[in-house]
Length: 139
Image 1 (cartoon, rainbow, N blue to C red):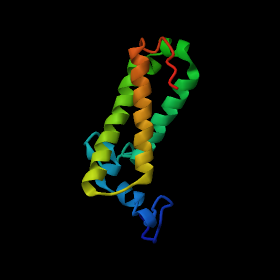
Image 2: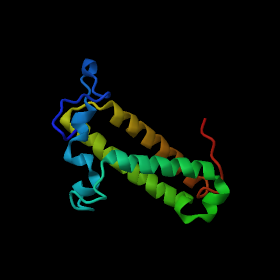
Image 3: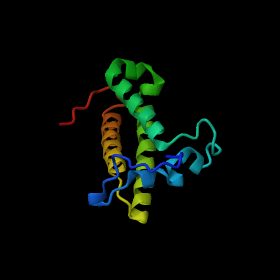
């Protein structure tokens, strides 16, 4: 929160010493500029949450398109999905390690890492079953 006001995020839970606002303000909170992909302040220098929303919207759309569309659309095929899910999983590993190093608990981050892990496992199983040509049921 940049306007100098005292702000407590809903995910800052003092009882368990969790602070997502402290984590979101780290330099790693904007990975595009942190890794030098875009300069700081660039329109694409967005918070990780925005990248996550884009990823989850992609995943949601892909899920509801069905397997026929996945086979005929390069962006939604199994291999492309595996690459995209792997990028999300890699970011979760990188950010999870950072949280471990600084000994910070972030409930939102932890939830995101669990979701990304689940999506990655499902993508891996789908790709292993035949590049998205078969539907894999995970019970």
